[in-house]
Image (tube, rainbow, N blue to C red):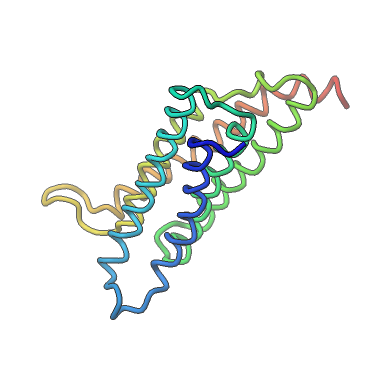
Length: 190
């Protein structure tokens, strides 16, 4: 069902190639500073649409099964796309990116399986998953920006690296949390 919230969610997916493509523009079209600033702003816009589509779905009473499916897919795609370009730019360690991306794929599969066995609520989003998301969604724009923030503050790369490493630790912890929740059902269904 194509409604306003779902169109906004789809726009988030459309922004992924834009973030990546910015870094492939020739220098005479856009300086390194311009690329960093533009990619950061596009990512922040995409992150804001995540809040907006959910707000509008509730406000306009336009919640749909398609929207419930598409929203987390768009979230995972935008994070994955940003992490891949950050690895390419050597701003994020490949192991950190693999941990975060691997967890997203694994937990998505786990949630799908748990839904099939009628236990989707057992692996609903937990507080630790929300902490991971906040850390990750703060780190990524800092790493895209990659420059000094304000005099006296650490530069964006340093702060982003600290936060993305925290996100990686929270990623592992949240994955273990969800696996622990699912384990009793694996033994029963085996």
